[in-house]
Each structure stands twice: as structure tokens, then as C-alpha cells.
Image 1 (cartoon, rainbow, N blue to C red):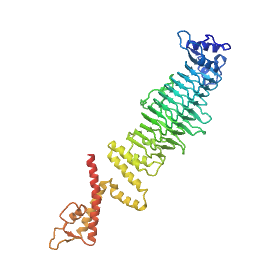
Image 2 (cartoon, rainbow, N blue to C red):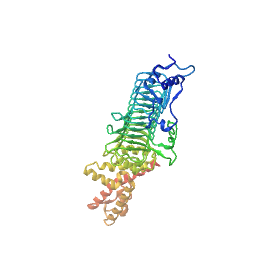
Image 3 (cartoon, one colour):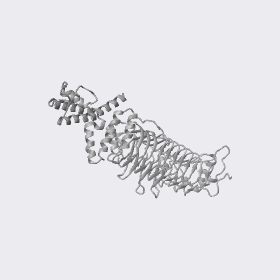
Image 4 (tube, rainbow, N blue to C red):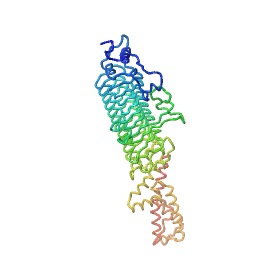
Length: 526
């Protein structure tokens, strides 16, 4: 392999050739922040220019390393002209570029590489479908106006997109990474996008973080984030990002995972302006939607349909503007706050199951019932049963009965008129059996009325030659509680007296059994 740069290369390119062989950094920055800004308007001349074909030559068929050195491509402050064509190639050398300005797209589809790091670079577009790396792929702090394509890519360790700004392609997609596999973490903290961020069917071995990301849908594509059928080996973060961890920092790695930020610390929430789709996703540790803002149109949806995760945290800054759907989702712990859920029939809970409720803010049982009744479907009995079961598991039996009572009242609204009338009677009298105290009051009232009636309507004895002592109070009580013998069984009611007696018996059976059932539940709790 030749140790001299090919003929026709410029002095800058010849210096790059030697820096590559030595494994050193070819730094063409001036030290002036304004002059060195790759996103600024200052033109970079020939003294900072390298042709893309030179980079391709070095990476695909470069010279041998100098003795005792490891060849690598390290550039800072370089202007690259022409498209960088590496598609289908094998890149055996380490690549790291800082603050570089590419005038045309990078083509890396079906390439194989070790570690690729582009930090703070201006790249018109990155085409890297089916790219395979054994190490990291870093695109942190870059600006890529026409978006990134990583469809079916295989990233050996981490994918970093922290503080990156993405524009959209002609289909309105800022990041196309459907089917991508990342063995470890995928970080996109404070990502800014104009177009859909799509990771459908992707597989992330560690965490997927979009803390503080600002996602904007475009007219050509109303979806801002598409994670349908994604599998995440740890946690999804759609949450806020503390400002102090980024401003003035030279690092582009995220930090503070799992930590609670200091109270009052300034932060940037996760914001999505457009639909968010997480349908059929799997999160092995947790799905955190906290300190987040979902700006949805009237016909748009935050879809969590059929999501599976041990913990779902839904503590948004304010309710989403559109619909939130949890239909058929299955979670372990549900951590939420009453002010996070949408109002006005914009909530889908059909078939939503959860094991435990862990509210992040006070959440009364009446608010829980209103949460259920805010569902977009008219009546879902299984939703009430699910909530009651979760409350019982937490030992809140009284709250569970409130939920089941609300279920019966809500069900009554769906019945025909005769059934609604009968249901109303049951509600007023015994509270569908969930108000035993109310039944006891009605029992006392029936006893008092019966006593007053029979005090003025003394009955005749069953046997003319036997006349037991007449006590109207005990007689009325004996009819209400017919299983108890109070010594008033020797009387023979007739006419209107018989009807009153029969009425007391019927009322007594209904109310007494309700009171007994309520007392039994109290004893069981004890």
C-alpha cells in the first residue's frame, strides 16, 4: 500500500492522508466560534475543504497505518464536497467527525462498520438502511435537514441522537428506522424533528429515551412519533429533561436516568405536536409518559392500544387535546394523576387491565369513577370490575363497593324504561345492596309505620278462647323479622290488616337480607 497521497490531491487532503495513517485528528478549526460554526453563514474556503471521494478512498481502500499506530479517520471543522458514497462497503477503521459541514448526502446503505461518530455536523441527508455496525452510531448535535433513513439497520451498541435537529423527506418522515435493531441504548434526548419519527417493529436492547424531545408533525404526515410494535428491553422515556444537564455542557450523553430532578429545577418537557402511536409495543421495565405535553388535534390520538409493560406512568402536564386510547393494554402498576387524562369522552379503556394503582397525586374514588365514565364507549362493565378488583388488592374495600355501586347506576341508563324504574327503586331504597345503612333506615321506618297502624287496628285472635297479650310494636317487628318469634303469632289479620301484614313481611325479607349482607361484608373485612 502506498505511503504517499495520490497525485492530484490538495495539500489539505494530503495532510488528511498522513493524519489517517497516524490515527491523529485532522483539525481545521480556526478557534473562532463564529468562523467554526458548521451551521452558520460563514463560507469555508479551499483551506478547509476535502472532497468526499477522498474520504471514501481512505475508508474503503486507505493506506496502511504508520508503524505502531492504528489508522482512523478523525476530522474537525472540515467542509466535505460531493456525496460521500460508502454504500455496500466495509469500513474497518474508526470514524469520528466533529463540527464538519457536508454539502451533499451521506450514502451508507448496506455498509458494514465498527464505530461511526458524527457530532455537531451539518449533513443534508443520511441514507443508511441496512447499515451494520459492531460499535456505536452517533449523530448527536447534528443538523440533518432532509432526515435520516436507518430502516433495518443493526447497531452493535448505542445509537445517539441527542440534541439533533431533523427535517423531513418528501414523505414527511424525519427519521425512518422501521425494523432497526439496537443492542443497547437508543438516546434521542432533546431531539427536534419536523416530520415523523418512525421506529415501527424496532428492537431496542436497553432504554429508548426521548426526554425533552420536541416532535412536530407536518402536513404531509400527521404522525409525530410512530413506535408501533416496538420492543424495548428496558424503559421508554417520553418525559422532561432538566436544563442544567445540557446547557453549557460539552457532553452529548444523557444522564440522570431514574433520578428525581430537584424541586423547581428548570426543565424542558417532552412535546409532541401530532399523533403518537405506541400500539402493540412491549416495554420490559416501564413506559414513562411524565412531564410530557401531547398537542393533538380533534381527530388525532395518543394510541397505547395493546401495550404491555410492568409499569405505565401517565403524569402529563395537562390533558392531551385529542383522544387517549388504552384499549386492550396490559400493565402492572398504573401511576397517574387525575389532571393528566383527557375529558369529554376522549378516553378509550375497553379491555384495559392493570394490577395495581399507584397515583402520583391524590386521586379520590369519585375521580376514578369519573375517569371510567369519561371513556368514549357508552358502558363498559368490565372497566368497573377491573377498577374494583385493583382497589380490593390494595385493601380499599369501601372504594371498591363505591365503584360497583356506580356500575349499577351507570348500567341502569342502558336499560328499558320498566327496568330503569325498578332500578331507580332499588337505588333509592337499598342502593343496589351497597348501602346497607340505607336499608336499615327503611326497616326502621317500616317498623314505625307498622306499629302506628296496628296501634289503632287491634287484630282478632286465631282462637276465640285464647287471647294473648296484644303488643302492636312487637307484632309489626315480628312481621318484618319473621324468623324471630316475639310471642305475637296468635293473631288473625283480615281485610286491609292482612295486606299491611303481608307488605311488612315482604319489605322485611328484602331489607333485612340487605342489612345482613352488609354486616357480613363488614365482618369479613374485619
